[in-house]
Length: 127
View 1 (cartoon, one colour):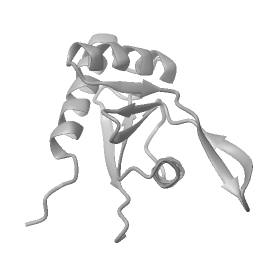
View 2 (cartoon, helix red, strand yellow):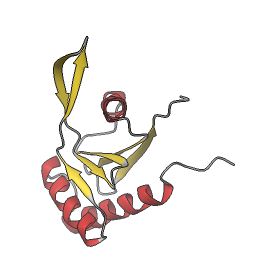
View 3 (cartoon, one colour):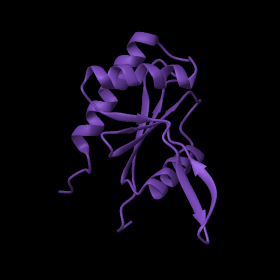
View 4 (cartoon, one colour):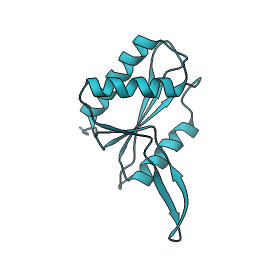
């Protein structure tokens, strides 16, 4: 049996997102959910960084920066979405965030529909 990486933390984050979705409903702006999620994470005593910038280098030169919505407990990248469905481009975005930040677990939270849609992504050195 394979143990899921950061299983308990992901469970807590999704629980926070469900609380936000139940309180606010669906279809608002992504930033609205992100800000509400920050409040809920704080209520659950989970630490987080919001809109933290990570540099991207090529040939030792700074060429860009990536800014994930949230990093919870320094371990899980969280992206809030308000889209019809989670697409490969959203998955790719989170996988890129994981590569750049050197984290292993990402979470996409989609607040578009009456029921929260979410996906957990992992990027390990072995995969």
